[in-house]
Each structure stands twice: as C-alpha cells, then as structure tokens.
Length: 409
Image (cartoon, rainbow, N blue to C red; front, side):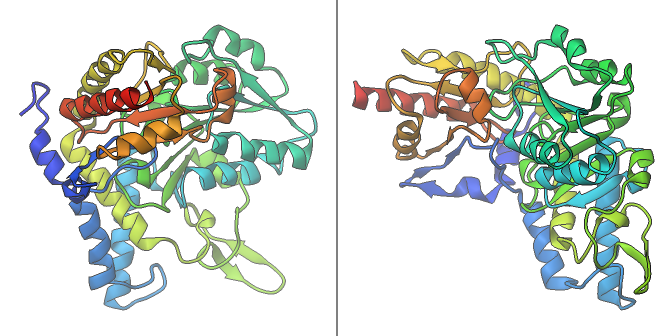
C-alpha cells in the first residue's frame, strides 16, 4: 500500500497488458496521453455483451435486446453521475471527443452563426478543437481568435477579457493540454465568458481520467471526452450539453433511432438524448465505457489525482537529472504529462531507442502543431503517466534516456 493509500500492486494486476514483455523486458507504458490501457473489468464487459446478449437496442422486445438496452442505458446513467450532469437527457454518446466537437460546430453553431461572428479558442488546443471551428468559419464566414499562452505553457488569463467581444458566439477551451500537461483555469474562463452571455465548450478528453469534473459546478454549456483516454474502449465518447441548448439544436445526422415518426412528407425527431444518436450505436463500447467509469469510481478519482501528482513531481525531478534535457510545458498547475526535448537527439530517435529498453512513450507534435510552432521545435518526446505507473518505471525511463544519450554522445 502506497503512502497515498493506492494499492499499486492490485491496480497493476487489473491491467493485463502490463504483464506483457517488449524486446524481452517488462513493459513500461508511459503513453497514456495517447490512449490508456484497459482493466480486465472493461474487457469482461465487452466480452459479456458479445458472448451473452449481443443484440440491438431500443428496438426489440426479446430478452437479449432488453438486456442490451438496459446495460446501454445503465452506462448513460453512470456517465451522468460521473460528471454530475442534471439529467441523462444531457448525455449524448458519440465516437469520441472529435465527433462531439464537430456535432456542436455543425448543429449548435452553423445554423445561427453569421459572417464576422467570432469563435475563441486557446493557443494550446488539440487539432480536434481547432479544425472543426476552421471548417465552420469557411462555411459561414465567421472568424477564429486565439487566446495566447506564455513560455511556461500557461494561458494568459488577463488577456481573456479582451478576446471576448459582442461578436463572440462561443469559447472552446481544453481543460488539460495533451502536449504540455497544463491544467487551464477553466472555471475562471467560463465565468468571464458567461458574464458576456457567451457559451463555453470544454474539451475534457485529457482531463477526465486525472481530474474530478462537475459540469454543474463548472456551469459549462458543453463538455466532451473519449472513452479510450479513461481506461475504456476506443471509438466511443460523450458529449454533454445543457438541455436548453440540445433541445433547440437540429440533429447532426439522420437515420434510425433518432426519429419519432417518418413519412415522405415530414420526419418528427426523437426526444433527447436519442435525437443525436442516429443508427445502431457502438453498443459494446458504451457498455465498456460504463465499466471503465465504475472502475475509476472504485479506485477514487481524488486518490488517483493525488497519486499522479506525486508521480509527476518525482518524474519532473528525475528527468531534469539528464544533462541537456529541457522540459516543454512547465505550468505551475499541470497533470500527467512530461514533454521534453534532448538535443541533439531527435524525438523520434529517442522513442525508438528507449523502446529497445521496453519503455513506451509518444514522440511527435501530438496533434498540437501550433504549440510546437510556439516553442520553435518540430516535436517533443512525451511521457505521460496514469494510476498504474510507478516511480520505478520513471527510473527506467531515465536510465533509458541516459543510454540513448550515451549512444549519441
């Protein structure tokens, strides 16, 4: 038992992939910002659907369909409780954060935005929170504005007000930067936007497995996250939206299950949340996501957050023991992510060399090319931790970096 009351041995035993070997060595998995591993309970939930009640939902009266529907809707209630939404009607299942953002861009924004209206984002956004808004700007003639950050990778909060004008129709902000680890002052930003009646979209893809989030306390208008970044299946995600907005938004896609009735003359759409869930959904994914969130709840997100903070502090000091290593992203409030460069070694070479030591990290621009441009670098090496990681694994990463440095020296 850890000093922070994390039973790390038990937690690691919950994740089968951690028993794998890479190049004959124990796997050290530090690529959690790209995707997390899945605990056995999630695998069992997926297998349970496919092996015991693999049927479609909402459409059948037979036992398997009713079982599948019950488990699917149970997961919706789990998501509602996990993020503290006020109603299951506010929980829309999507393919992930990217689709959730596109849904809001095309269903909430496009019908009402006009030329010269403005959308505001921050300088540290993932491409998925940039490109959909750029597409919207091309479609309707509105403009994208970018709140700057400083050299530590922190949002310049005092600049926010000047970017929010009478033309601003939406502000979209990442909660936790996937390439820098910065935790943004989201509550402060939402408050500033709401003072001017500007709706706020929160990209919580990176934050959801590291920070407790209460959408009612935040008072955000929309929030999105992906299952694969919180120990769940890939290809499944969630869009939370305030019911008042979702009610007035037209469907994003047409097809089965999002209708109440159809004639050749007119279609009447289904009620929330089904209005936005056209076609047969990723049923197993939704059920697996529910199991993943229940797993996180069983460990305790506050406990996870404190454990990972201790791990991040340890990792920061350990990495800085490597000569010439420079951290990219040194915000005073950050989580999970340790991005760095180690001149003259290219990040891709670092990733390849330390893979030979069984250590998995991510190298590249991490779908944040504007961030790389800001820091005047092509890419970083990124180690990112989760609750199943240990200080011993950080030590193995540092040892592998010393070996890589020796080869190049």
